[in-house]
Length: 210
Ligand code: 5GP
Image 1 (cartoon, rainbow, N blue to C red):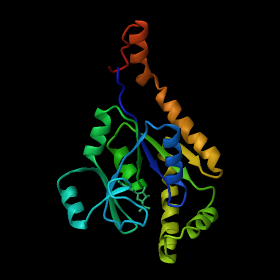
Image 2 (image 1 turned 60 degrees about the vertical axis):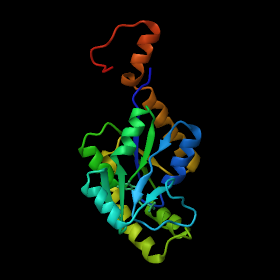
Image 3 (image 1 turned 90 degrees about the vertical axis):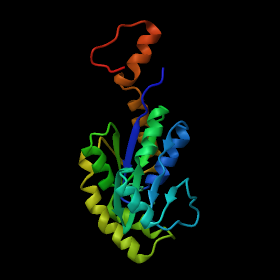
Image 4 (image 1 turned 180 degrees about the vertical axis):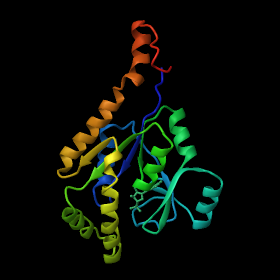
């Protein structure tokens, strides 16, 4: 019996190590999918269209917004990013667990819609460390780094309403914590009881939807 897919909404200030952490937990749990967002941002060197993002023009993005195709969307650092409703529906139908790497504005939209999701915030150990990590990236200019640092504080102020906060100080420990969150969420009674009851011939439980 297929259980419902779990949606993990993962946010972090850029430079906190979100991509590395998401990739690491997908290595641990290969059945975890990563939602592919739509963006108007320019493709970076090693990025692949349809894999990292669906890269679209501003016109196409605006048309998708007008058509109600996004479950959430936001402007981040001057570019638009959105999660298509179709992407989530597909994962849900397949009973697949997926990671949604989205900014705090988008995550807040999903929270307001009471979307059943697990909200995970990845934080840097300090703003100094974040600055060092951003400066170490070859891809971004000084201006971009300054803008990202300015945004980081505002994003960190939103961490309190997430279900989990992972402080990415030591990468191995952070990966272990993230993997533990996934393992724990997969053991939720509402997800496991039905399977258990069918296997063991237990009665249906009033509080658990089947
Ligand atoms: P980047 O351009 O560095 O790939 O991503 C910049 C920011 O956009 C990150 O914080 C990332 O989480 C966010 N982002 C990526 N996809 C989406 C999306 O579909 N919706 C929202 N709201 N933010 C997104």
